[in-house]
Length: 143
Image (cartoon, rainbow, N blue to C red; front, side):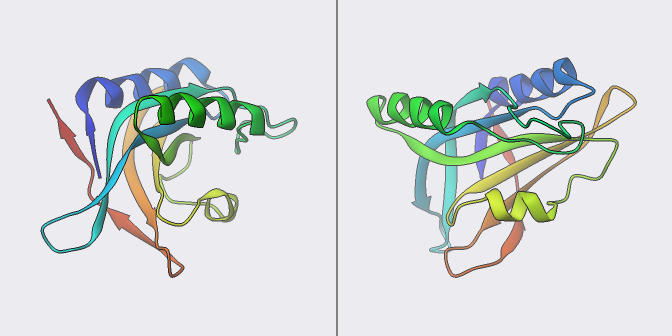
């Protein structure tokens, strides 16, 4: 996956601003084949969202259906689609939890930013295969 440097910085800023709660947001872009013929998500815009999880926002997140639809409509108006999401993990590794796995849609990328002691400590991205399962993907930050 690839995303512009400024969008990457906004994700980090969002994560630090929302501590002690997990932040969350959506990624808008295009899905296209790379040089190996595998699909890759190219992110052009991000949409910081509100974590509406009622209990346990310290270790989980939820994006409201209405906010998801609003972001999807705006992305479509720009000729883009939702290609994934991002969220933070507070005091835990940047690996998908069971809830993260359940939230991810096939073909989507999931960026996880681990925050330790009020500092970003690790960032990973995970791709949900259409045929099932996850694999960690490389994040290419572009200028």
